Length: 148
Image (cartoon, rainbow, N blue to C red; front, side, top):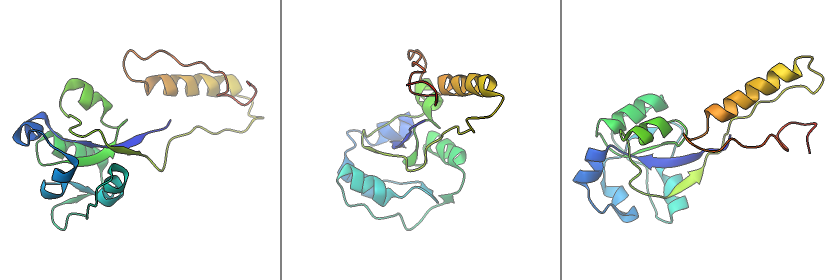
């Protein structure tokens, strides 16, 4: 599953900073995560952005998302991780800029595994569970090794 790194905040935070632009991010409170760098996001967005020098550095993405939902600032996070919070309106994307996640999720198994059908059913279930609500189910074509 491919994912992207996005900026999120609470709806209240976004209302306190109306008309937020890329250039505004440097002066706004930014939550930090040990793996996600604001400078990476800035480069992808076309703005120079240093890392914040103060504040909590989160090592748990879910806790950082909760801090953002509580109005503590902007957070960089995986889109898949906050998909439900975005759909429920607990978080919003104040800026469209994003960049591809460098590490995505894959299921890998040996071609001679005797439990092929069970593995495929699990892979289909996992892929479908990760789809946005209402999205059409994708075809298996080209997904499994013996299908072109």
